Amino acid sequence: MNELLKKIYENVIRQEDDTLDMEKRINDCMEEYISHYDNISEENKERIRDIVYYAVLVSEKEAFQLGIKYAVKMLLSLLTDL
Image (cartoon, rainbow, N blue to C red; front, side, top):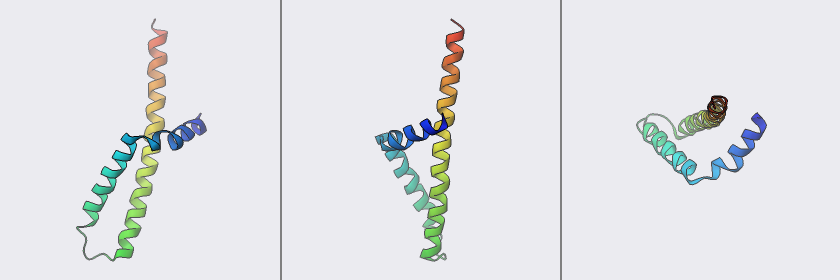
């Protein structure tokens, strides 16, 4: 099941306008925070960007899978109450 969800996420969800808009907001937010640190070299800022972006990407995938699992559980619960 996780492999199927990963494929759906990578090939469908990541291409949706809502997801692209969310990623832009996250990148803008990240750049806003990083821009306050003038004493950090550009190389270190890039490392920070990479680390934060990776953490955000993993979080997005996990949140998608968790959301799908809860939606299915809720649907099954509603169907068993009929």
